[in-house]
Length: 132
Length: 254
Image 1 (cartoon, one colour):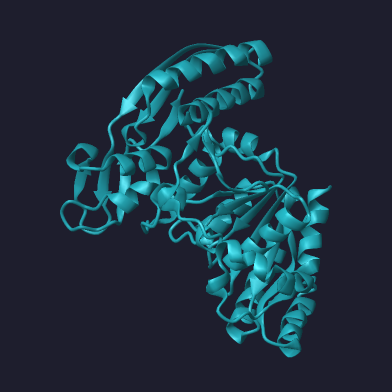
Image 2: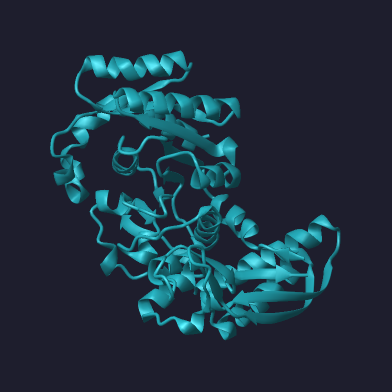
């Protein structure tokens, strides 16, 4: 369950942040989940809740509310400048799984639809981050 | 404000290690990957050390090939993160090949940084010593390694062949690393044909005030020994690089 590791990194970061600011309550957190990583939101949310309870038990840090926001993935070709979306690309199940673990693996499986280059930038929807 | 949550996970995942050993050389083709495989083999089999391996060459990983693994048939194991591939009872490997098999993935600087961070934040290691196979050059992967890893637990082993260009390259890299007080353990050679070649590398190490860690002798048709046949050549190599192995074992016991 790779979603667990991602949730763990979120909670660890929030606990560290609260400690460094001498707080024990975090009111509200927005967690942005990039489309490219193809996370199972239900599993991710379950892990976040479990780990949030642990943070309260072990560190007395209360994370009151979190909101998961999904961000669509888009790409820009570094060679010809073309911009496209993940929906414009067809990927095998194996490729999707690889990208799910390491979004940069996309460079092995996706090419610019216009010029065929592997040299593109992931403009949005790459991975998971916290927005405060 | 956007916060990257991976730093906290990386710290937690790496804190269990007793030591990190990075094998580096700015020149390609000197045998970094082979040196890593040999060191790992000796540590795991002859010193009973649990070795974790990380192939930091993200765009062209090859350590799995020297270890004789076919990543196409490997299924990624998940358990609250990713389990590295179990090579043997005392050896495990994390490599980009785990995810992309034999595909080539061209990456720019920022993407290398992202991929390194992603791998380190989701990998749940089991070993005591992490051996890192660095790509050639002195660029994004190396800089990210120097930034993310606890340097007080780190040893950097520089690898070179006795050839002039390799010696000059390792010299430049050593000077740069020493200027920033990076923990360079010494210089190890590869493909030494005779004592005179051994001496060339020793001389370079001495001039830099670094320990000479020995030289892996030249072995004809080395590709034929990749994988399980590494066992057949270990006895020819181990006495020559005893010092390199001992430096690692000593650091691991601290």
